[in-house]
Image (cartoon, rainbow, N blue to C red; front, side, top):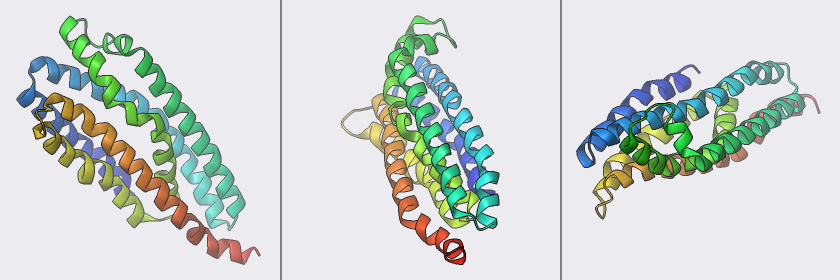
Length: 213
């Protein structure tokens, strides 16, 4: 069960290496600096959602083990609602005021210009990322290690890194391809995660639901 969050954290270094190498190749040092800031801003979005979902994990696990599917569903709905509201509102603020967030990390006009442009593309998929965070963490809480591991690998290793390598080479996209890779990966992984959750949740809760029938 711990492999899923471990993979999520470990692959972050590989993602940053891929993006920084691409920015240096297709851009320059300013693009690398701007990309570093984008990673920092994304952590400002991820960490609160991770804290919320990880805090809900023992509640869901306890009620699942206690054979109380209604409380499992109630805890999940509360976590999902809070995560989606946070991700949508926080990302919305960043999209509306990108300059303010980039200037928190640098006062260089060129980095601010590149970062303010790139962050609106890079963070677009984060608008609905709360749904993936809630569903993926619930899989962990319900002991679904294989599904959780697949979803952890999907977003960054299976989708994001290949996209970050391929897209900049298509049609001369260059650095724009790197910016675009993130939202494409996010949207595809969100759709996949939510779909898998909807398909599997009834099967997972069926045994404890039948015991209480």
